[in-house]
Length: 117
Image (spheres, helix red, strand yellow):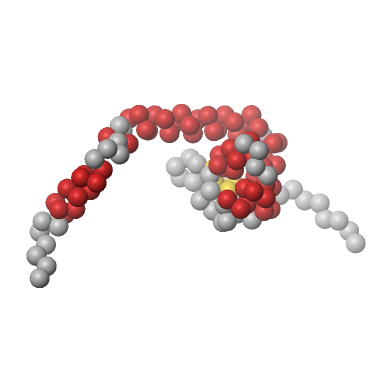
């Protein structure tokens, strides 16, 4: 039996928003890397993200370990973008009075509806 040795591309996909997702899932690479860096094993990471196979988790972690500087820089950039977005939209981050805002929006949207009998 001959062992077939071939290079496999990492199970990563870049989305239109610039984020990198693992396999054919919506799981961001940074979530897998953060879990790994927090001490989770690939098996534990797999339990947290049911849409990933154990092979996908191992391959994503292997990619990270082989490209640590690049992935760390990517993650710093993503965190900076998230922080800028959070800070530039302070009203959307305020949970105080959210019930009142939702009820207000609901009443405005339904003001043209006929009353229910």
